[in-house]
Image 1 (cartoon, rainbow, N blue to C red):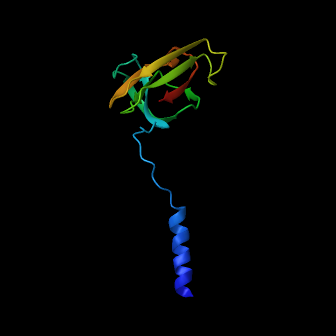
Image 2 (cartoon, one colour; image 1 turned 45 degrees about the horizontal axis):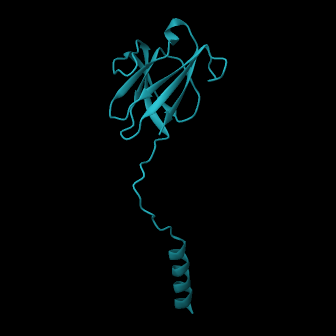
Image 3 (cartoon, helix red, strand yellow; image 1 turned 180 degrees about the vertical axis):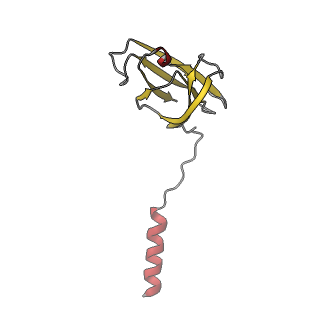
Length: 129
């Protein structure tokens, strides 16, 4: 009877294990590391100036931008983007301007200017894939 119970338990366990389906899909990152800078910022450049803090951007989440520029780490396999909404901290239609910067696939840092150093309020949404 004990042997039958063990066999039944093993059969139940093996049936419930997921079988990999394979495929060549590339995972799209759901977040990325970011370095915050107090000065400078030239789009599609690695030349941000005066590093002051580190953080994380989460895909699709509005983030209040408190620094003049951001150095966004590129995804090795995916082009990404950062949309900056100037004049608002909630990524809304009340923005004075909206600029989207492409973050190309790679292994480097792309610098994005936010204009916060000019006394403006800004927010942004990072997207990838």
